[in-house]
Image 1 (cartoon, one colour):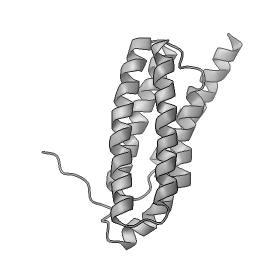
Image 2 (cartoon, helix red, strand yellow):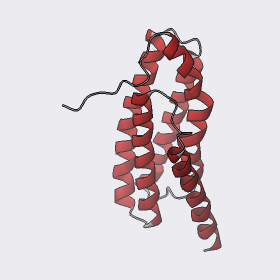
Image 3 (cartoon, one colour):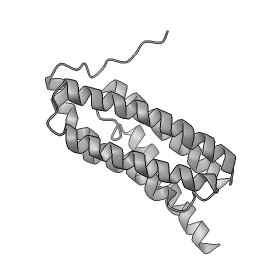
Amino acid sequence: MVLRFDFFQRLNEIVTSHHAMQGSNEFEIGIAEIDLQHRQLGHLLERLKESTEKQYGFAANAILAELAIETRIHFAVEESLMRLLSYPGAEAHIAEHRRLTEQLEKFRKRAQDFDISDGLSGFIQTWLIDHVNMFDRQFVAHFISKGVDPHAVPRPD
């Protein structure tokens, strides 16, 4: 039981850190549409954390399925922009997207056996913080130099 407490304590620290970063705009990269998608992914990961804390296995499975869909959309947007704007780091960034997608699929398979709490904090760390800081921030200046309006967001229908 001590390990379970330590795990959730660490998970809470990571999510609290994530919320603090959102509030201080450190999580945002400066392109409104991508920032909006990052917030959506963060919201899904927060819901995943809550469902695992309460041991709601079926909810976790549904959230992971939704996360997989939203992730595919998000990665497709980033990858399309990288290709259209001839981003020089596109190949490495896309390879990182594939690695994260594989990691998500492994979690989805584990979730089918209701075995996802182990490693969830590391997963959240990678998705929310490390990927944005190590990869997404790198393309911002290039995108803006190519004419991307950093304030453009889709209008609601």
